[in-house]
Length: 326
Image 1 (cartoon, rainbow, N blue to C red):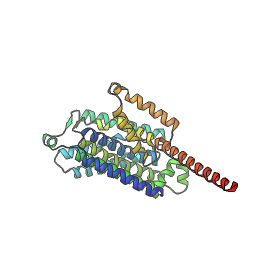
Image 2 (cartoon, helix red, strand yellow):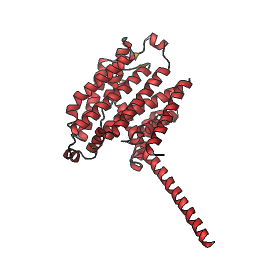
Image 3 (cartoon, rainbow, N blue to C red):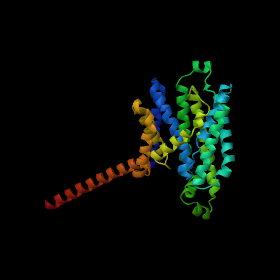
Image 4 (cartoon, helix red, strand yellow):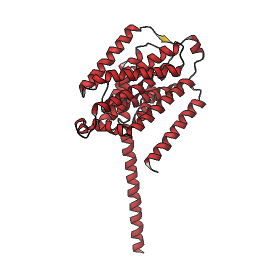
């Protein structure tokens, strides 16, 4: 089966399984783990568009996640329909990204990374000072709350994010992003505008991160408004993208399953050392598998295929020799 159709069939099967879990399961723990996995996968996939496709390592991605969560939460709890609240959050985040992206993207390499980190920390502290109180759902919302709505909203967010990433990776714009990532000077000499391609990646990545933030705001019953702006969200997204396979479509999905399920499986007695455990894991993966777990799986499949081919070839040679002896 061609690789393209194999990916379509595999993706359809996974999507059908996810829908089946959402419709048929009432296990709140399972649904919570599934929502957390899809949420982190969507956030990591959105960061991957900027970091993996365009090569711009941002440490301020949580800003856009937080904007999506905060705007959606405020408008939705204020009485607006959820769809209108999410659409407004996406629009405001995209405009904000376009505004801050113009000066930010003129920096290169480590200067861009430090600049995004400074932006993220500044907004995190500002929101914490301006909105220090807990944000909780209303009594009416809590009375009607169930896991079905947040589950399918998060699943939809992940599907949209993966679809956009897939389209970008195979489009002319996406190829231009990857050319800029590989060699900005060479890409510019061939007629590609590096700044415009990086700007597209920055804005699209921010809008998708905002959608993930909106899903988080709809899922969580209560949280401090500054929490979605925490740099922890950025670091987890980067960790998942690197562990799964940066610059790929399925890498962030694999990494998020590994991260969330692995975190849930760790004994509660070492909960304080989760950062250390996953930090060591990150170092091991970067050193041994620079392409992430996806690269490791491809190596394993390739090695098995090679062994099967050699085995088939050896059997054919043995049979031909046997016929010659007869």
